[in-house]
Length: 57
View 1 (cartoon, rainbow, N blue to C red):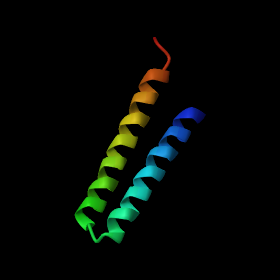
View 2 (view 1 turned 135 degrees about the horizontal axis):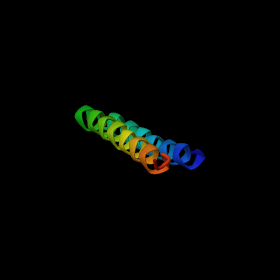
View 3 (view 1 turned 60 degrees about the vertical axis):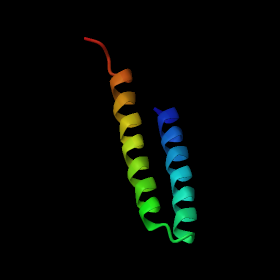
């Protein structure tokens, strides 16, 4: 589980950095898109990690 949080942290930190760059360039729609994509990507990683680590019946 710890590996998942490390991966999510890196994903969000990179998105945050990209978002700041877009905001500095006044590219507000791009900044918004970066954050939405990061949220979706992180949710997908979290959901698939839970499915992969769930015990088999």
